[in-house]
Length: 286
View 1: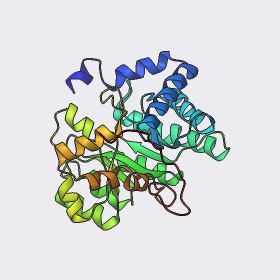
View 2: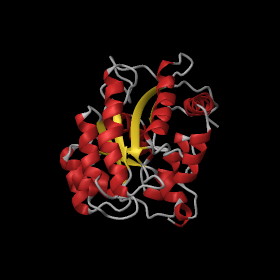
View 3: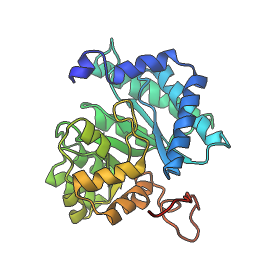
View 4: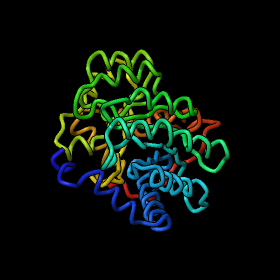
């Protein structure tokens, strides 16, 4: 929060987004997708969230959607709208929520209905009115895949399970009741080791989640704070800092990650009838 209050963090990136053109943003976006592919990532969730106001959020979503149509992009992309990432400067939390509920989501749904835009999921990263925003996104036809219990315990996990969220991420402050709720509903826990490590957060209770039957996925959480495009490094960090086994991280980085995007029926494992999106690496064993 000290960084945020000093003008850094999300709002610093928002200013860069405002200054950049869609072409400039897409050049950066495409280069990062290609870097991810080199480390074995063939299915990637890409989020907005650094625009905050409607026009900037729409710009980011258009950039992501260009990746869906670009024949040079070999990765499959799941598109997530995260308009509730931070309260815009000059607005109260209540005003920002009202804008999302009455302006942003209806307009984005209209564009999706016209075939001009594609959105798969909705994410939120805010303390208030989370449920209302998630339910509005759900009504628009988007899956729930959102930040939960990263810095403080708000019992948002229990709320997400109640709403049948596909996945919830971070989870450093998850309660025992939250773990039980996720296990009962089959919600995927998306663990982000790089962010927990770089922000000096206590690791989420991954071993307890696994023992309780919660499907655990892994992600890079690539952003200006956690500038990591290497899933192999994320897997290594999960073993070293969170006590996961190599087999567990393999499942978490493949099949369970696909499940976190509601795509495990077609992606995430080598099976007859699934997308053959494996990366073949010619590398010495030594």
